[in-house]
Length: 186
Image (cartoon, rainbow, N blue to C red; front, side, top):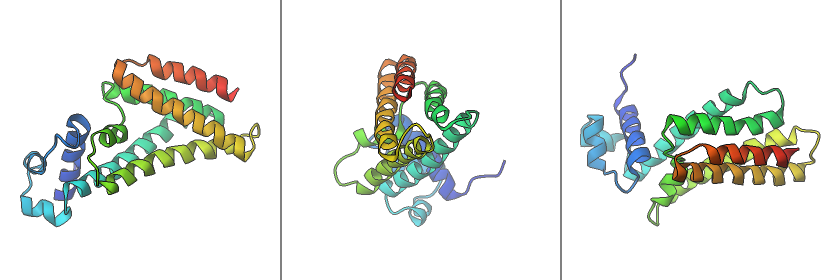
């Protein structure tokens, strides 16, 4: 396995810390120490903790969307892919012991004035929204407006299922949301 460079080690370490400890609870010195880099090296790549968090969210988005698409690729229809995203949620949230959504977690932990992080969280949620919309627009059952309205309702089911699963430490909210999604798209 190729050894990670300084920038990659900082992002990997910060990703683990931000996701498991929270943004406010993670300091620059802890990131530097656990990544095994010099402070000067860190500042060559990132101007602030906020910039590290943005890099974390960008990498997380790429990973998350890739795994989502891999999981639903076994589905033959666009509607099946949308419904199949709940299977991905079950797989993912079990894998992380129901730690929840990195974007929801960082936003709830974020003090005012961190717009670059807020923008990345919005970007991710809007990309998931657009992913759902585009799949539903491929279905002949819906016109464009219906596809977007249903897509927004599915997104609410997804987001609610994620946070409730995190609170409950259980997959039943995701299974319930999947059943609701099936009914919604019937």
